[in-house]
Image (cartoon, rainbow, N blue to C red):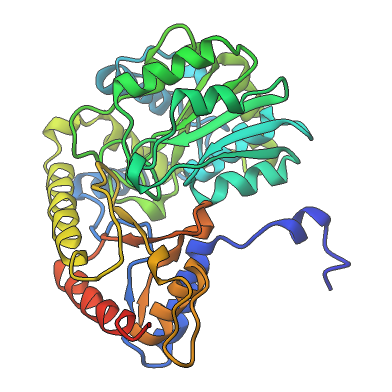
Length: 401
């Protein structure tokens, strides 16, 4: 049947993170007690004040089509949030609200990238970036990093990667999957490179902004010399435990916001009216006053420290200390070439499936994120689950010789 389907669909890869979650559920349905460390979802409920706003919206009959780029008052609130939290000045006309940050990313890539355009991706990258470039018929250019460099690129790497065909640079900070956070000084050094290459746009995925363990979030959009080429992507899924509400947004140069509005109008129109009203309440709340958010970040920090300490008990796993998000990106390459007598481990894919089928612990292979030396572990689960997962992992990895 592949010959019937379009070339773009046949060439598109299934999301490896979603695939691992699907396989985990299948094993659970067969009676196996799977510990899922693959999912990128806070294990907290949406705060009550946000749910109350959704109920109020229903009672006020916000049940009709919403404007394609989002309600005007929501876009105004997002502008106030960007000013309050990030010291960034935007007008509501520069904001487009979408059905999740994933659609926001897709809107931008499909609005900017032509066939043959180069898109620069620091490795590791979120799985969907590469696939969106593929959909746009662009060409991904990968910049390798590693655990020893805290999974961050250098200005020299960036400079060397830019060519006349370079059109877009996509990165996330805090990063999925590494949890790395770029400091203001590091971002400023990258901005200095972009100053010399005015044809390159920068898409900054800041969806993990609030899950940050090192202080105030820094955005690359803060530098005036490149701000007119920066697209800030954000949303409420991670920081407000609203993954199922599906609301993301961009703040972008006016011409690009208009293009994304136009594209979205033909694809989905405006996102869910009730979810938008709930999002208005979320973004209007100062993070410093949001006790639910502060509690969640505190819990994630404690779990990070707890998991890193536990992982020290597993020989051969190398980790850094992630400064944000809720992942540990562990270098597992010391296990490559080993076997337990039946199963041979060649790469991170093999190791990830070995852990799933022998320890019933779901992780995600780093190959999904462009780094086949690593596996991603999510600590968006309880300490009890983390402890049990490491016990299982240590036992089965010990069989590999």
